[in-house]
Length: 144
Image (tube, rainbow, N blue to C red):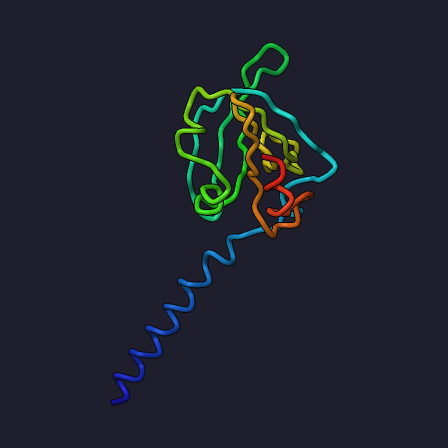
């Protein structure tokens, strides 16, 4: 009987640890990005990573005559699809305009707010609830 209780307690503890791991990995906007450093980047998608808790767009931008790849953080895949994103709308080679906020450390990383596609469609890329400026899906719906 004691052995069964010990095994059940161990399993419960393990389940709690596993379930809390993604929560610890999540971050607030202000821990990585600077609202006072807006960026406006025009370039071509080189790669799109549909990951949780944040998707990542890799965009090649010409800066000072050289090609530079920026990593753009976006919301989770499910949220992006609900906002009108499709996997083929951001495939490699598609030219986009990304508006967002640069990383605090000044690297070529940014939190994406809006992404404008070649046909003029404007999609909200932000991660809801992070504290990012204009982090409001309701107001984002009106920007399409």
